[in-house]
Length: 561
Image (cartoon, rainbow, N blue to C red; front, side, top):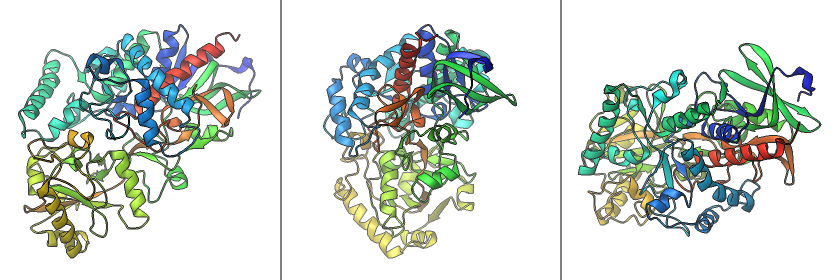
């Protein structure tokens, strides 16, 4: 680490924030709103990190919007729920950190709303384990309202480009209906509403954006309105230490080294290491691949490696925020979320057997894949569906019945007139596959999955088909032709990172923090540990601990010369 005196600084700020995702922007906004000066540095050419391409959902127990909708909750219920799920002990999941998350969560939402970031409750978007103590079936998820991208001015050109259906202003609460469009009146209404706001806004010169893009747009607009400064294509190359305290950073900007003094502190919101093949091989479970992750290319763990050299503690480096995915013919991963919860499909391992509830949360599905793979090859697994599924439900961004020829020609999707033939074509035991489907169809006909409880939780049913009764997630796989697609343990970022305390400070031992150095988001080990309690359980801690860190840095440093 570099050691420098005050005379060498090229630039000064009260707080330097590394990364422009939701956590970093919330940190920087908090600093400026407190009357001080933040500087955000972003190494990429586009803004928003993984947040901008996410669903933009924020999971916060006991938030104001829940009360406005008459959904009962309190901090203790949130604590009970989290503790019922977190089965491992660690510094990242300490009581102090969980309590800090729960206490500051509602305040953080109220703060960003007061700064102009409009939010709404995703009513019905259930906690992922709503059947556990403290779980809420109607959900604790909040998302940004649709916003006009033009509020960013010329900064909007720094957002990632969008193509095709991704240009539509689709919110998280719209996805269940859109995935079954045409099956219910509600789905038709939702589709019409999405088209109306997406096209209608553009007809009057506005540019509507939703989900993570709306969240980043709102936070950045608020930060810029507070006089915020942001340097693009600026990578942190080192942290400057002075007598054990982090006092600044060296960055590469426009091809030259710039030394930036951080008078109060440095907040690392630089993401994880999902796109670093070497770090994945070192820390993650096998098999792993940078080609299965959906995070931006800049998520390479630079900050993590720099701070680990300072002796910082780390936790949960072997886990990620799993998102079961297929890999399209062009090499892009595509999430499988709503598709798995629909009737007329199942997922099998390399032996041709089911091994989990297909409709369960994406994070748990990834963990199940790795756990099962230790005994039976299941990476990749196989998603098997029949003609009913392909005719009724969307597949990714493609509507029902839209099945490009290139999917078959490339081998991405396999099609056959019988299950026996399908199994042979994908290299599975046809006898076992037929037996598995026969058992599944027996359960589906009864409407109760006695093997893995598909459709029993409120979360399962959120993406199901309400026209299928008694279980909206179960339907027989019985109508030819049949289809199969490989499923990989994709992800939306790594879950582990630097261990921080309840004030967001980076720790080198359970009782020792590095003065002036903070971390949040996927730069830090998650307060959730190896669990994922509900939609938005990555963005929420990033924003909450980003705000906690900012306020602590301001309080601790504002008295310094």
